[in-house]
Image (tube, rainbow, N blue to C red; front, side, top):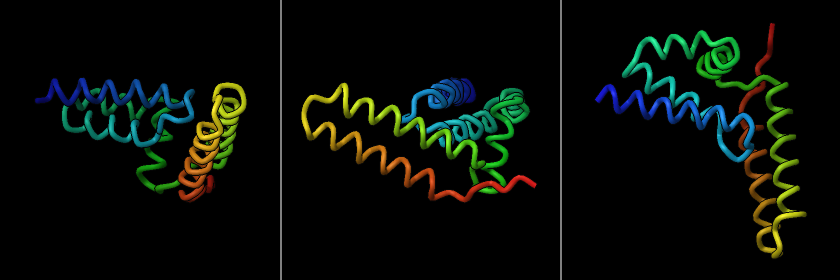
Length: 121
């Protein structure tokens, strides 16, 4: 079972990292899932993930404060809109798909903004 959970954790981690670059993929939930899976299966990977210089603070801040830093919020919302507006304008041929992309961007934006902004002190 531990091997299965470790594999799922690695897949979740990989998708979470991809989510940094692909706005539709939810980075935070996937990284939190990876941490939870590693906690139950491979303590070494859990420690590595939480001590990672880039991913660790992001996960710890979210786990502790349920908040996202302002810089990450601005970057995330900007990337979502840039990507999905590009899709709506240049990729989607039918008005229904264009509408879908814009509604998806609005929904993702609302989800991101629903979290508190992490106040760095």
